[in-house]
Image (cartoon, rainbow, N blue to C red):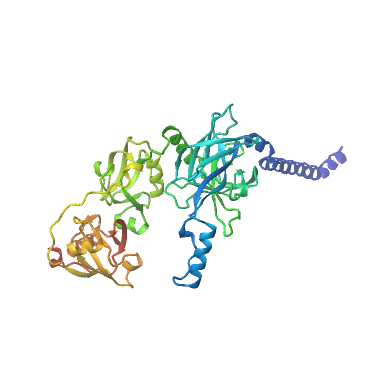
Length: 498
């Protein structure tokens, strides 16, 4: 009995080792199985499901060759007559001709609404849609939005069409699988796969919210859909970054949460109707936040308030918008999108930070498309006496006169200090202040004299600030600049009394 027990004790480590090896092998096998499930074996089923809703678009445009297209040659050159004779023989009276362009799109409703890029159909005289099954239909233009490069088309469908739906692009994560479909380089229906490479990319537009992907996108893919693995459209393929015109794995698709709102408005109105707050804004930098005593750089700094909804509600230049309609504002880009996505005529609450306190304003939004160009009317103002001039913080400053206003293209009611020279070794020059700029406020208070500016500098020093915030105007463009107070002179009783 003792011998048997001893044998069991000897074998126990071997049995345990075998047991745990089996457990580890099982766990590794399960992990591999789960990883295999995360990686699709094929996109064929997905392609079969969504491809009938993807279309190829052909546009036709009348182009007239003009004299402006003749090669440029020096006036009086012996080649000048040669090129004119050549043009007259081959292009008599600037004969018009037809030009065709190709693109992609996708059907979003069974009754024939189709989404594509604006640049695909821009200036087109006719638009033809070729469906996956090979038949073609003429399409009419419902509306366009150049700001997001989106266009909505409509075909008169004789029977219900296969269509796809928009997904929630905000749920797309970097690394998620996606597939792009379209008509690359005019080669016909094509599918490419890749992942979401980045989110929330901006190229050049005000409302940019692009998904970056490495799925191959080429010319002709414009307007085609970017699908997630559920077969939902999360982007409209719009642009590529390429040194040679071909795909190098950096493509951009306008996010579906932007596109779907645009499409809804185009379908309803034939145009976009975006909310308009009526302010000019800029991002808050760290030195600006320090100058104002802000705890963070979140928010959008108001640089100008022309006649409009914000002005009617009491908003002022120098306010920092921290919350719009119940949503926190992190930067100017986010605020622009929030305002643009809000209904025209809606009364919203806007929280601003002003002089160390928060205030809530109630603003009834206007419409951007019709109101954005509005500018405040100019008022007459008497000429000023001989202006004072002084050197301060590396700048030579002078109070504005009528001659200066005329020379700088300012309104007659403009006030402030003209920058007549800037020391190129100064912090002011480094921050971009140049001769011809006008300082209209300092420390978020108006300045009209050098003494006003000196007083604001002194106030900032007494408050323990490291810099003073200046509102600079260059032509009609305002912006805030924070200048450090190191080396700024202390004001004396004479300058303070002015």
